[in-house]
Image (tube, rainbow, N blue to C red; front, side, top):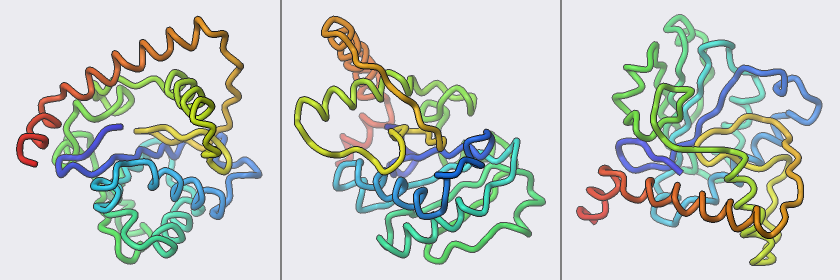
Length: 205
């Protein structure tokens, strides 16, 4: 997945969409999903906590989101380092407190750029990070099936740099489609691993 300017793993949450009103979309289920996503980064990145970008430009965050963030942080202290709330500045006076988490309210994508380079953001945030959720889900399922690891998240498959509470059924793929999916994923990872910021971080240790 992508990362912020300090190398922390990045998680994007979009607050618009009818899925937020779904019966399963409770604070408890969201907290379980967030904790699952926190377990995915490599150990070094995991220890530094996630940076969560909340895109609330079209709709204010549902109360369940902040409850879930508080619950996840309480269950696993330090799993979330920063929340970047992309919304109107007026929201700053009404945002909920998240103990132990740095919360920044950002009024524009330009302000977001102080924390996250555009190369690490998806097109929805006017970035160039190459990401296809459907292909990632397919590759992840193939990997899990190959390793026979029961790592299914509580309510939906995660998005590496973007999370939206939706249940997405994924059909069984024939072998040739699996091979093509793996090739596309390898090409995608090649582009990610050749990112200048990542190479600089590797050189700096």
